Image 1 (cartoon, rainbow, N blue to C red):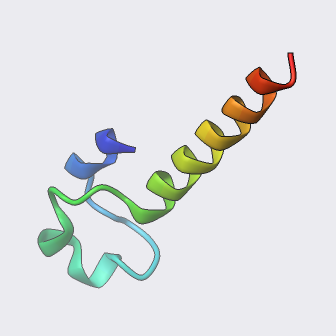
Image 2: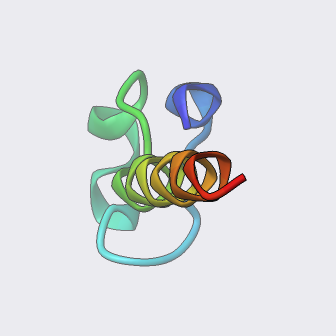
Length: 47
């Protein structure tokens, strides 16, 4: 998710603010990373 901070948005709600959002990680990528970490942790706990 942190790697998305240097990307300019081409679509979505952030597009009109592309220059202002440069340096800020994508919120969707951050949310997905949190979900993946939670699922990974839950799977490790079940083994």
